[in-house]
Length: 307
Image (cartoon, rainbow, N blue to C red; front, side, top):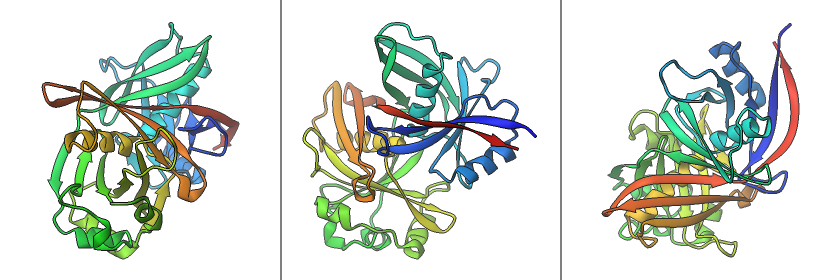
């Protein structure tokens, strides 16, 4: 019988039992893709990661394979942040001063990850996402409202259009007028499935957000909904969606466009896992050049899976 070691962490929080839980298998070279998928399903978390040797010539330090319970995905924010927290904590990334840069290979490409540390301890991990790609604006907002059990009047498509955005993983950004509308959102699985069937292949996620946060210092209050195995699943804290959100807010002038726009996105309050997600959007000559998402991580537990 073989065994595979894993580490459980909570991402985008400084407190245990908050943020988004993640399972990391830091030594996964001996696992097959099928075994990785089965382990991700067994963990039953939004994502599980497997660290393997990088592809030859990639220029990466590590290759990270990211699985949801029913398939492998090209990129996700909180798994990247949690994985590199674990690698740094275990000494597989040598910390060099206040910020150490490491290169991660994922299906979406090779991306930098910055590990912030103080006195030898990791304080924050920041993932650099791809330059944003903005899809078409969705005109049929009634269908989107129905998919989220909202009223059409909760949306404000003239000022804040519903739009598909990707910085590595595509999310449909659905801005609403008030926090109350965010709080009452609830996925309607059949309408949700119909709505995303009209989107490009691979789109299964909607991100509901508003500029009416709960916490002092936050910019936005958000919730992430995904269609997984014909059911609607809510994510406690979503790094990939937060990068898309930050780019969207800057592109549409909902936050001031400047060389470095800093945004704090709060998520997870409605499901008892409050999270804080730091976003930085860097622009040059009126164009977004970089999107970065970061946050704190809490080490929760360790274990072994037996195969």
